[in-house]
Length: 213
Image 1 (tube, rainbow, N blue to C red):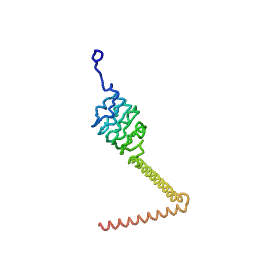
Image 2: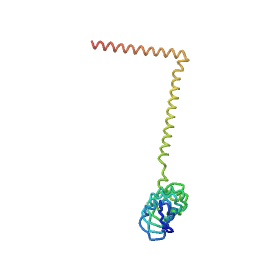
Image 3: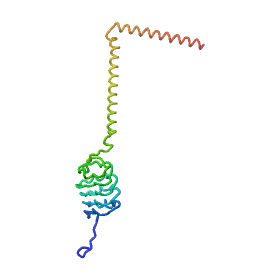
Image 4: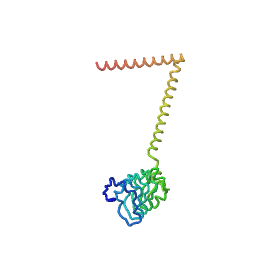
C-alpha cells in the first residue's frame, strides 16, 4: 500500500540492495536463499557466530561490490565462483576457519593479504603461504620434456643409420665402379661361390633321389 493504492512488486530479488546484520549473535549456516538476491550490492555478516561453508553459488551475486564475512566460524574452501564477481571491490574473509587454496583469478588476488588472515589453513596468493601443489612440477611439463628427449633420440638414431648406410654403400660399391681390378676380382669371387653352391645343391639332389629310389 502506497498513498492509498496497492502495488505489487515484480521480481523482488532485484530490489534488495544491501544487508547489514553485523555484530549480532547470529548462528548456524548462511542461508542459501541469499544467493538468489541478484540485485544485492552490499552484504555484511561480520562479527557473528555463523558456521558451515560459504554457499558455493555466491558467484551468482554479480552485482555484489561489498562482502564482509569476517570474524565468524565459517569453514571449508573459498568457493571458486567468488572469483567471478567482477564488481567486487571490498572483501573481508579474515578470522574464520577457511582452508585450501585461494581460487585463482585476477579478482581475488588483487585484494590485500589482510582480507584472508586468521585462516591458518588458507594458502596461495596473495598470502605468503604456498600450497603443497605449488612446489610440484606440473605433469604436463614432465611429459613434454620426456617427449622432447625421445624425439631428439629418434632423430639422432635415424640420422646415424642413414649416414652409416651411405658410407657403407659407397665403401663397397665405389671401388667396384671405379677400380677395374677390384671389379674383376669381385665377379670372379661371385662366380666361384655360385659354382660351389650349384655343385652342393646338385649333390644333395642326387643323394635325395638315390635314397628315395
